[in-house]
Amino acid sequence: MQRAASLLLPLAALAIAIFALACTAQAAPRAELWQRWAAHSPGTSASVDHGAWDLLLGRYLTPHEDGVARFDYAGVSAADRRALDGYIAALEGVDVDALARPEQFASWVNLYNAVTVKTVLDHYPVDSIRDIDISPGLFADGPWGKALAEVAGEPLSLDDIEHRILRPIWRDPRVHYAVNCAALGCPNLAPRAFTAANTEAQLEAAARAYVNHPRGVMARRGKLVVSSIYIWFKADFGNTDPGVIDHLKAYARPDLAARLMDARRIDDHTYDWALNGIASPGS
Image (tube, rainbow, N blue to C red; front, side, top):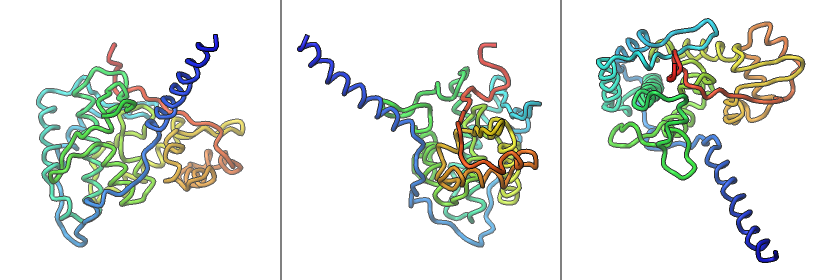
């Protein structure tokens, strides 16, 4: 009996360690600048053509009555898959350092979203992007840690683009409304390609749409339930519950703003990882 107990203790300790590592692996990455991408060219008129991405969004992204935009992964033609590959290759060939910040932002966001769509297409049918377990590491989840693009000879993962480029360079919480992770719980994939000219308008519209949708914020009977995005990335939204609430108030329509008036803390959070497809893969 004593021998069995002595064996169980190390096993229990190992299980606890594995669980702790798994929780750490699933935690949201911090914003840590990749200095290689800090360069830019203020005042330049150089621009990037995102017309191909615009065409694909127009053909396959559909807004639904429930307020969630869905992408028709099952319907993408072979020709449009090639067009998507060509668009991503074109972005990979852009001299990012020679762009001004607004052009850089648009290019990085569009690259992130286009690569995400391509990744889902490459593994479709799937019920969730989290089922695409191609990231390196024992406890890695989904595709975000794998290098899926290459710009200026540098392999880049989706995590690199979001957490080592977009978040630390722009320090704008609205980044989270721009990048799309192909999940129903995520802010909608933008209906148009981001450009230097439309970025501000698209960010504001996306923030307002998400905050005022139930998957972003639910304030009922004195309880405040928010998207897990505001918990995972709380540091980007003021770093405290009151900071997040202030951000929500800035975009809330009058009825929601009234319900947020007396809110002091977040009671719970939720997120739907189901694929943002028009039809489920099994239907």
